Length: 581
Image (cartoon, rainbow, N blue to C red; front, top):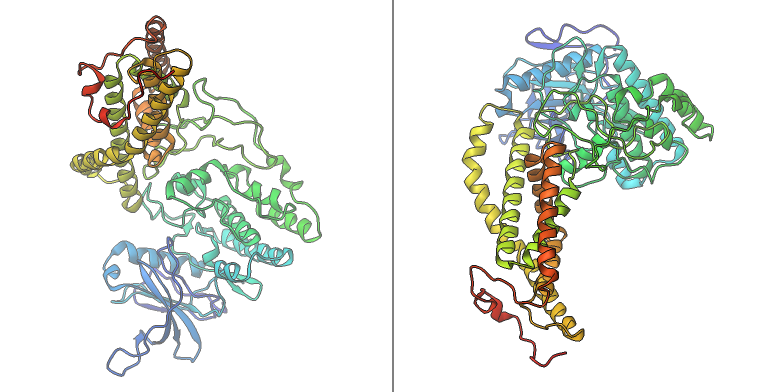
């Protein structure tokens, strides 16, 4: 820009002389929409206008606003972001727009979106930047495929220089992603500062309210921790990884799954050129202190541009090796079950990759109130396995008791999962609120009803396969001179084990697994309680085994029924000839 703009915090429409660089995009950073042309008239033959700007067509839209291509009074094409009418009444939405104006007027650099004009306090708030006739990076990659090494160097350099200028202005973009990078030829232009953070300003968003696109949000934004320049270098690496491979580095799927991969540093860079992969691995570290600086990024890019392999400069950023793995769990980092500001030390898994944080090692991170509390928690596999063995052993002695216990467990697990998931989605959408507990209690009966219905549905296949396994075991028993009756411990035990395995890994098993792990973590919070649960389960299984040792061919106890023939559904199982075997 050729001259300094006015203070954007003043009221009224602010004309900010000088050219901008790119159209602003919609504030709602969670979605991108294909361009669509807006009508040029208001339905009465008049041209549509926003302030002095004549609208030519619509560039994009989202929940917060709409971006138009427009014509300025000077005859120049511009891009204008306009808040939707119902959003314009929200003081926080206006504050975000004012914030974006403040950020854009503060940053002066090529390759960064600049602001031309703004009216934050008018009836229809808007922000104007120069129109850039370039598609976003994600559309370019989708249509043409991954970028070549030369194009990747141009993209990396351009974004790196833009970020340096942004950070020198005391600003953190916070939302660098392919959709916020417009491509003018091979040159990138960075846009959309709707959730940018100014170093000397208070945080605008609520703690725990995640704003942005999952998969391109840095771990510290997800966790509600402090942001800094390292946050944008993480976004830089994620954007380059997408451009180099054509795939999102943290994949697709449910939001909690993607956020968990981000928090663990589980980026899939298999499609990225091996020569630049070490640099991107370093920049995608879950721990900001281990990411390369601007100077290191640019030097490594020069190595890549000359045909070399990156990684040597940032090798010193390899994190220390620590082993704090709990004895009862070696798979995922341990985090507090409830939202907490207590710092935790997660475990390390195996040897760390050079220049990258070991998977799951996030030293001193905090759990944000808006984040799924199940992410990063121990799976408690061995505890659950001990309970399953005990349940199978009990089924070989008193089947009805064990089967009803299994149904009750599946119901409780699915109820727990539905309740927690509903709360996570509520807090993700609107942050932590005082009404959360009351809403959870009010919805509890509905969640219980849904859990009961889904439990019946997901139990059909396990029950069928368990019955098949029971029949097969009874036939096999007849071949070795044992009783071929279903009413025997071995057949019922095998059938129960198959049914439990199907309920765990079969259709609908995800909610059962998630809820089961949450229940165990809630009941057995400490190692002492966990040990007690495992010991009791083991003793129960051992006691049943001792009893069965002398009664392997004896009829079972079908309490509360007198015999198996009275059990509902028993008549559906075909009988085995008495002389079989």
